[in-house]
Length: 86
Image 1: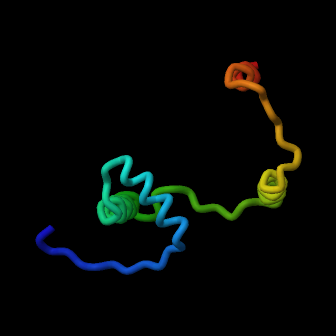
Image 2 (image 1 turned 180 degrees about the vertical axis):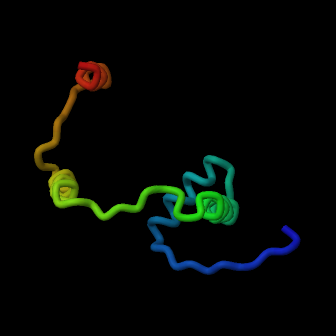
């Protein structure tokens, strides 16, 4: 990149570590990933994914899931697929 600039961003350590692990597996640098994200913003003329404020039901469901409440458990992938297809 002959004509480039620097961007500084603050990100929590865990987020950076997890993202770096995934990017390393994809053989993509953090700079390349950020460039791809910015190009998608330009292409879409906005954020390239939906940004929504969750409704009350979604918030309640998320809190229950985090607390391990009202979870549906299956014993195998086959059971999950069968239940999803029924």
